[in-house]
Amino acid sequence: MPPIADRVTSLPPYLFSIFQQKKRELEAKGVDVIDLGIGAPDLPTPSFIIDRLAAEVQKPENHLYSSYNGCREFRQAVADFYKKTYQVELDPEAEVLALIGSKEGIAHMAMTVLNPGDTALIPDPGYPVYRSAVHLAGGKPAYLPLDADNGYQPAFHKVAEDTWDAATMMFLNYPGNPTAATVDDSTFDQAISLARKHKLALLHDAAYSAVTFGGYQAPSILQSDGAKEVAVEFGSLSKSFNMTGWRIGYAVGNKELIKGLSIVKSNTDTSQFLPVQKAGATALRSDFSAVKRNVAIYEKRMTIMLDALRSLGIEVSKPRGTFFIWAPVPSGFTSASFAEKVLEEAGVIITPGIAFGPSGDDYFRVSLSVDTKRLQEAAARMKVWNSKES
Ligand SMILES: *Cc1c(COP(=O)(O)O)cnc(C)c1O
Image (tube, rainbow, N blue to C red):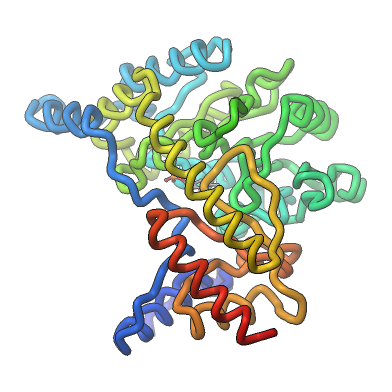
């Protein structure tokens, strides 16, 4: 066996791949599995974005290396988007960086900030990449509890004083995966004052910033006073424009953090393929009507699934964003035993909340990544399961 570093072998097993293995086994037996575990849109990328890619891919000058920070057109489009949407001014040279998807930026930012043994605050429950990024960078993850009784706002007061002292970075994520929680700007104001007090890098993952409904507009952390002193916001075109496979996102905010991240990246990758960046610029310069059409589809699916869960006795109030439902597991189950039962007896994949942190063990996540007919089918099958139980 060739040697593999401890930092890799000590990573927890990726729960999602275990479920995918079970899915293949059931499908091989002829079971029609409905997968509500995939955290990605099922809808196609809007054609105006594909058209721009197709035109740019023909041009030989676009086959060369991009500049390390991303091409000027993309960075300018990000800056213009922030000005138009959030009234935030960004210098495209120093405060904007193109990413090969925001996940890449999150992982490299942990390497940028953390010295070995440094503490990083990560939300519980939260997107699993924060924890693994901190671990791979040699840091120590510490949980920032989210308050289930208060709309999953960060419970900053529950973090011990010596943890604040040891911490050098903190991740936040609103609208949130897996909780679908949203915040108003006062939460960001509070986070910034804590980051300044404790000298932390504050990293806000805004992957779902445009996936909102009911008139709610998610704030940018950069709208809060003093944000540029401590904060970087990660953005992604994956979820808003159905571009998960394209790998295009951005980091914006504090100059020193952006510069540090660009140093790590210039020693690791050489930015994204230029036609992808240019197509991404076209997406960000659009009127976002394609995003609004998508979001309307998610909102309709959300209503259908919330009604279906309610009829099973599972009550969840309607979120203001994302395409996730974060729901309590029925009593007598852990999140894993419930997810396993639903897969084996209903052929439906849901994600056990434990995958997102210890506080998730009483919950499961439904991803609205299938059409309404399949969602109704999934809910009906879960009903069968439910009546068998009671
Ligand atoms: C999907 C997702 C990302 C990663 O998005 P990419 O830009 O495709 O890398 C980051 N954060 C959260 C919370 C996500 O759900």
